[in-house]
Image (cartoon, rainbow, N blue to C red; front, side, top):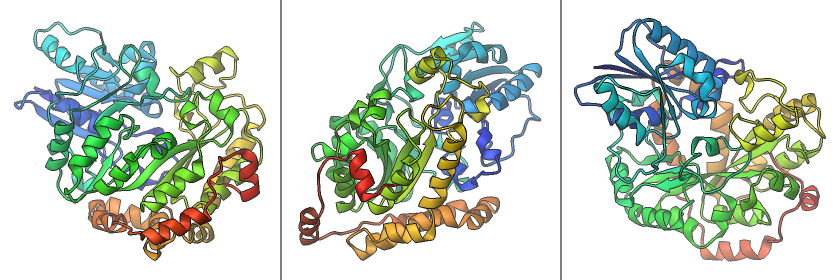
Length: 482
């Protein structure tokens, strides 16, 4: 059987603000995971439109397309094309699960939720010529999944081809998070067997790993055993976690010992009212500065995530946020305009309040304002978002932020990592076009090498740094971040 698996490019990947490096980081692991359930005799073509031109001049028996909100229209066009040619078309992913009635006319079968249990069932039904129109996930487990078909991935087209996922979902339920709808009707957070996760890591070549899990530290028992097993593997890795998990116990120290060198942290907002509005309870009454200092003391760089446009935000939120990030040595910042994705509690609430302004899914990219704002106008929100990115990544702020670390090595790592990520776009574009992007991986591994901080430096740092809880007033006093 000829099988075509497609990840269509996101709409923002072709906008005037397209940063090709951002969309050339990770291969489409979801599709490669499903491919593991296909027969070894099947002829499989996995295409990622972010790094290659799609070939639509073929006639596969089965076409599988992964749909996100901002590639939805493109995904539907591709699906319609193959349906007309007589291929059997499957659509699945976050957007399909959120709006099945929209996706269904474009597919022979749609998948709602994760596919580890439903896709093997579909293959049996398809072989018996009795496939269903809809497969909905109810059994949630990844304890016994086959190894990902990494042989289908064009490794040289990605900066970090060794991406990996060892958990599904998240234990928290923020109102604006897209994932809650995807995992509705079953467990919303579950893990792989530790031995299986370690075996998958062991199969990956090289040194660098990137955990794409929404919350790598979400299950402390699993994460602790995983990090214990990774010690001695000589890996450096990046991942994501919450402020709460960084401050609790010694799990973050275990992660650092196992090779964690960079962490995506969802700070999102400094306002307690905004946190309550978003149901982001895990951040309430948490000391952001203490979490930052703890990560820095372990030599871990921070990618801070921040959301603009929550109802309590005012015109000063952009400067406060940027200043806070610079003053606290945040390595990189990711900013988002609040986006009410369909299927989320936020979308339902705004829809009930008649605050949804457009259902053009191409605009739901966290860069555009698609809802009726409160304290800020849509123009103020958009302009403030754009200003925050430009301001945080000024050379002067990159230098200033890097100087907040104790060791010279950490200062240099910060400076080169931040500058390289945002200031050398022509170089990245050249490497992508010449298919040499993966050759930069040794440079990334070098930048992510361990920072050793002496006990005396840590003790001095602890005495000098205040640990009082963060608040909006404190932020104004000390000035804020990105």
